[in-house]
Length: 416
Image (cartoon, rainbow, N blue to C red; front, side, top):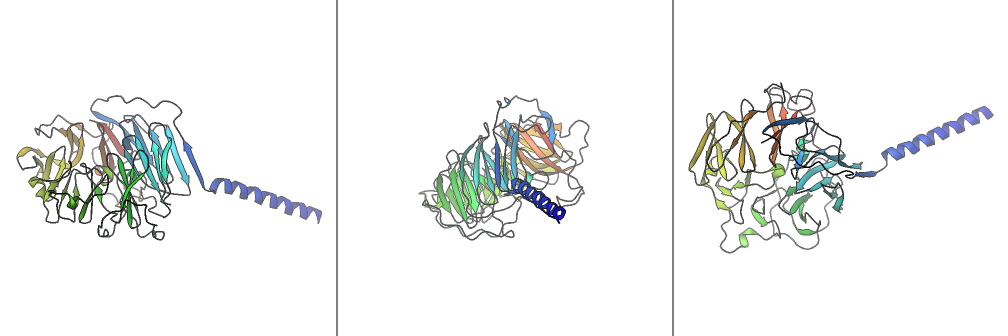
């Protein structure tokens, strides 16, 4: 009997120890590892491929690369590093999942599945402000590379609510926790504000302080390079929520709107098309007509308009004066440092002067002896670099199925 009692007590002790270990591992926890040594100084890189990574980097302030995991964000540098380096800082939340990441200047802003919003100084890795979400939002949908989380949301969006005047008062209480089948739109950024979606409400926060600027009911919108927020059939001043239609003498396009020429995460878009398909530039304080953007499939970058033809792309000024022809071009990637980056069908990168239409020699987007047989997924153009997620040309459409990505290190990074 004594022997059985000893065995029973021993089993209880082991069970209790296992429970304690399990609690320590699985209990809600938040871990922040800040910068302990100076960040590597940005160093100019010669034009060409600089490296490749297995996860998609959000290029921040031309100095660091931020990666998204299911429950963590982490940063390394420099941008020209050949592969993923040991993190200079990281932030992990358990059991919450990462919903989205954006950056405005050196500030990295993340939203989590419980709705919490956390701003981190990208140079130090320290939290500068945070907002309690009080309501569930999207869970992680970045798949293997995290590209959908750092470069733009992919979750399906339903019709945006009708846009009514925003409120500058305290936010109204959130709706009931939102189900997994009804995701909200991702975060958008402007120069000094970030637009954060919650179920049935958008909140605009100051990037430096986290102070609420204004809020409104129209969630699925986009920000412009000129400092506006367009959503549904209305446009608002991004800084204070003023309805653009109320400005005297303003010529405002009629929605609903289609964004054109955006940076990652539908942010700082340079143009739009209105209800009638008419193009407008929105890179200044007031929208202005751009006839060349009326063409279906056209986009704008660096102040020029690019549109597809039967052999590639053509460029024109916004008022439709020809700039140049670019046969064999498949995609307009974006603009950086006064140049527009074009991707060709044989996977070469071309840099175009948007003022004259002139191009340089370009170079192939391959790391060492890699083949050029891939299809572009998502990408980012920023601070003199381009990063592109590469997919197989005839592989499965499901990102979670083997063979979807071009290689293990499927994201290629190049200096321009």
